Image 1: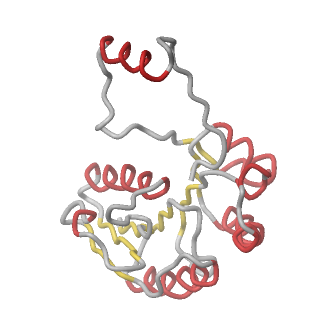
Image 2: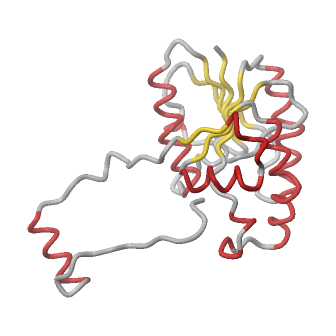
Length: 207
């Protein structure tokens, strides 16, 4: 199988949210499926460390994407042509975007619907982009992955037509995160919480 992957968030020294998710998922896909060919689509020069094995073909597609108009151009022109050129059987896009005009089956990861909620703090231009294109991407995708039951319920609430093609794949910890000793835990409690157990609440967009 030839699997094309949107790897535009694999940025050297800048692996945030979606980039980290892409790294952890895609590196394991490549390792666990040496029988498949992977085509990585970057939108700028890439770091060779992200070419995880010999079955990966890196491709840089113009233009670099961050602004909505460039994102649309990248997916609808460059990605669409590359999917055809490299004869991809499936397109995996871990940032929730895909090519609406491509006939290749696509699997997307929708991390959240922050633009639908006041706590999302999405600027106006980005919010309008998501408002217009998110329903189209969800409708076009063959399968939809999300990272929590909360987001799955959120998607089903706003877009009930996704019912039969959405699955939850939870985030995982990087191998760098390891349990610490009771002595270390106690020292941290004394330093940050007057010796009390710690409780952390995170609220807002996961991406």
